[in-house]
Length: 346
View 1 (cartoon, rainbow, N blue to C red):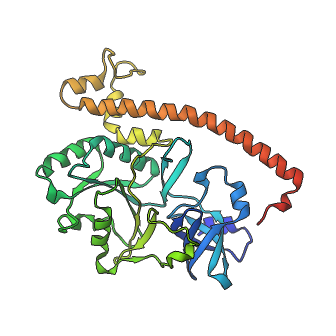
View 2 (view 1 turned 90 degrees about the vertical axis):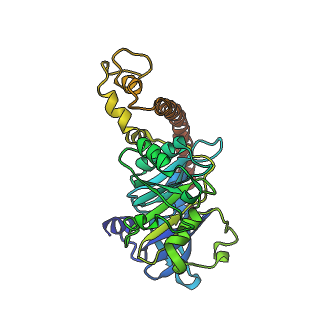
View 3 (view 1 turned 90 degrees about the horizontal axis):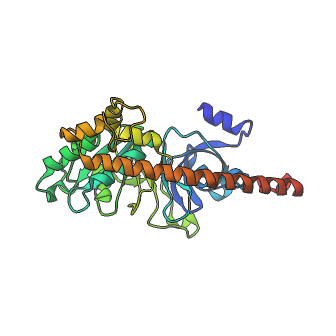
């Protein structure tokens, strides 16, 4: 692993590991030498500029084992191949990494009262932005009488994305997921609470469900909580990342994801008469023409406009917050240099 060799840079006692669970500021890391409780080093904390710089479940890290205590210190975060990120819940303006190094992101939505096309669109934006391959999984098909209609509606709102309707409780449609649960692949499951993610996980794992090199809950120094993200090993060799249900999905720096999730509108926009067309009332607007012809749903364009404005608003706020953060970091660095950098705990 070239990234690891570069990260440890002469620290021969560092070894690679993968974060399999996170409990606040404590982590569980699996290595070639076993499973360990871990925390980041003092230097790591000092150099982390934002919450997104800290390890997340699925991350590969460089750790120094403490053999006598079955613990480890995380010294470096290896480059992420993909990362699902959202705006952290609440008024604070910072990112939250939901999971890293994900190959396939299963967006789970129930076909009963939870069904919401606009919500699925938001998850698709975050999924495309993450770098993982999104797949929409419509659960509780046994409770819905219009499965085909709802699948068609999702397919229209998710161009280029596979859509599957399943009943994890009855096992119907579950064989369609075999293509994603392959040896070595990491599949993350995300969605609202109550959509059947746990039932889905248990169905995929059967009776062989096991935490990846699990440790006791009290190894997390009392910080264990049931609302954490965690990796599970599946019988076929795949890795499943379970995440808590999210009451809200705030988007974070998702311009690319927006373009990909609304690629149908982007394609139509390229045919507009004016390059700066806002798709509102302009003459020669190909997007509005598609709506008039019944080829595009008006609500989908409304969702596109609403999300575009949201991202633009967040971008302005993030720029302002970034400038304040840089000033704070500069003051802190200056203060530390004055005291002597050697005082920072390794």
